[in-house]
Length: 153
Ligand code: DAT
Ligand code: MG
Image (cartoon, rainbow, N blue to C red; front, side):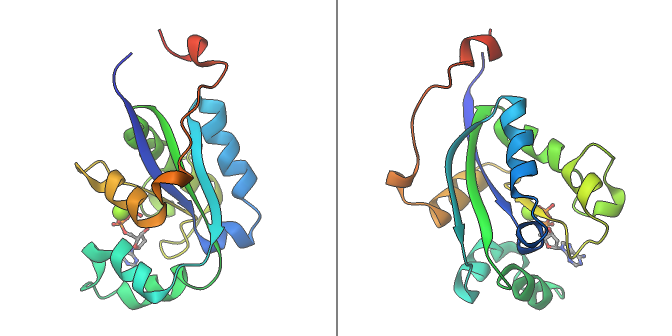
């Protein structure tokens, strides 16, 4: 088995309102990823600016910030082998219209501005930065899933 990783994942306000939390959590659980943190929370303007710091100067930032602060999100941390990249693959493309059926955005979204889910990108340090932004260290649980010997060689 190669290195275990942790990644930050969030069901966005559209996914919460549409009752998709359970479906999305199920997909990651079924894959074998391990949920190490999760909470329903409200993002404020300041957290939106920090989380989306790379997009603050983009023309779509005001719409993105209004959307992500418009209602509760479900923030999570998932752990597993190559978890960051595996979650991104399972999410699909940024635009649901470009996302293959079978991916979360490809199955549950139609519009770029309502793309249901966030997951850390694969750039070095992104996942750790986002995990620290949303969770205190004592909110992350270290434990073994009983199926781990059957998930990993
Ligand atoms: P991703 O969420 O796939 O990591 P991103 O980090 O490039 O994509 O952008 C963050 C979010 O901003 C994305 O989920 C939807 C929105 N967004 C990105 N590009 C956009 C654009 N050109 N117009 C409108 N919204 C956009
Ligand atoms: Mg991104």
